[in-house]
Image (cartoon, helix red, strand yellow):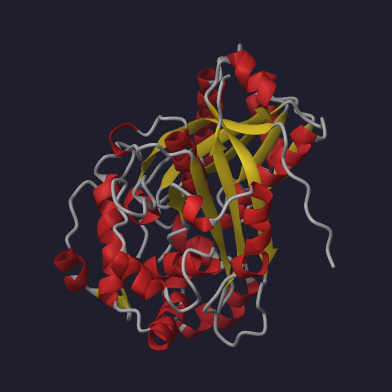
Length: 393
């Protein structure tokens, strides 16, 4: 039996930063990442970004630059460098690694940043070389990109649970409602359920509004000791629980659950809370049915019962189950690995009272889940963190 993980006592997360997304950019990933670092330093009241002594970086588009190479570009001299190109799992993994480094004294202030560029052909080129599965088992058969793979999973999920496109649409409509209160969201027009249901098919049952908009952008946050945040006068949240699992339930012939279910009891035990205690939730929303997998895997409802859960709740920031209050990737955009960081940054904003017109009332506890790194038939990465509002007292 594995030993119970130790808590993250004394470690906090602070200074949520977004470099506003744009659909295409002539600038490289380093440009976006550098802007995020500058904003992190400014937001934390540091004299210079060179005070940051830990750098955990996520990107799919930074090549040929490595995280180490970027330290010279940015004039950093960190004690800790890590490169975490894990897509939708990048933020959860980065936060957990940064937290342990700070806890053990290996770094004082760690910047966790995801920065991506996006050219006209970037997404296609990235998919062609995403994995050996893509090169050997997908592209040669004219089935490129994640839409077809997720369509197979979505169809099976619908057949198994009774989920409908109306259920998926309810989540998408709520996220668009939230996004209209987020100045960083790319999607600026309201979305009705009729709009969703009437959209053109992409890879049935996946339709247009089930798909994210690839874009360029950056998101980031800082990890440090609680006393450091207080000394700087920074609003912060405590990291109270975190889990990661890769290739969970590998025996399943088609993915109808993720690795959260393996470790979910550990997550809540670390934080000393239950699912009903959570005030705001951000799931990784590359497709709406994937949000439903996370509702089940994270204990908000039983396996197979997400359709009933969706029908029983409202998912706007002012609803009964505030979910993806930024608008999620489906309405904000997916800037590569920054899509994973989007949720951590948003929940941090909610817990520190920085969410503006989409602020969830009395938000004290937030959960962020990650998912991603698909081969042909499943996403291999699953994880989650629980954050608790900090106090300057």
